[in-house]
Amino acid sequence: MGFLEQYIQPGWSIRSLTSEEKKVFGKYQNEDWIHVDCKVNCYGGIDTGRSIWIRQDWLEAVKAGYYMA
Image 1 (spheres, rainbow, N blue to C red):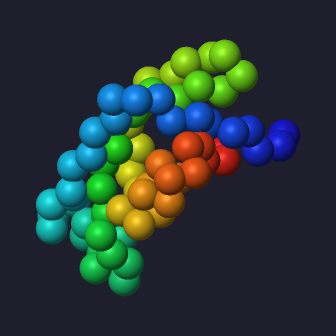
Image 2 (image 1 turned 90 degrees about the vertical axis):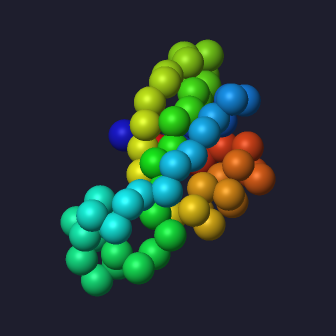
């Protein structure tokens, strides 16, 4: 199965993870982790969901308009 473009739809929101939530990332817990609520369009199929990102990675995806999944 190949990677597909997930085009980010307007209206997304983010929330920083708490210190408690970050503990599951072990040695990576000092990264700037966020919850992202968004809609994405993949070949006409709109999907809504929540995912966890490093803030800088999410901002790069928003700048590009999509991410690969």
